[in-house]
Length: 201
Image (cartoon, rainbow, N blue to C red; front, side, top):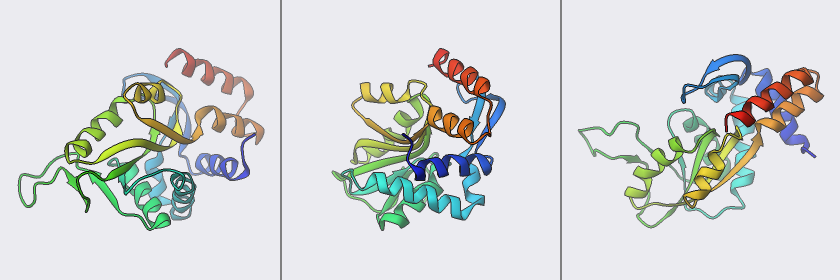
């Protein structure tokens, strides 16, 4: 049973163009029949706030001192969660400046604190591991990773094998089911996409 709030969010994401169908090249090089683009959230403040509230609700059950968002897609999402929780936010830089403070992690934190890593979605696990490296090198501890969407392509299992626990608000399967229920997607198309996801874990 998909709760009402999550169902509404899945429909809103589709409506905003954040969930698209067609043929899309992923970062891994794979051609996917579904694409999730949460960078579009910055153009929809109300939807961004809704995403922040849903993630914040899940974050309240986890132990952390600071939030850590992965650039670039998760930065506005991280800010929305930080505002909803009134919690401090840090982020690992993609490129370390060779001037000024030359920090690899921006924001105020202390070595030994626990960070809750936030990202927009998870496919495989390597981009999360890349983002975790500078955080841990700076002395932050990370146990939990919070994402809006799990593409169900092996990332959760990969991170689990490295000792991290992933928490996802939505899975692609749930989004597909909600869209079929709402008459926004043909059941046959859903089944084809599910099969593709299964074959490309």
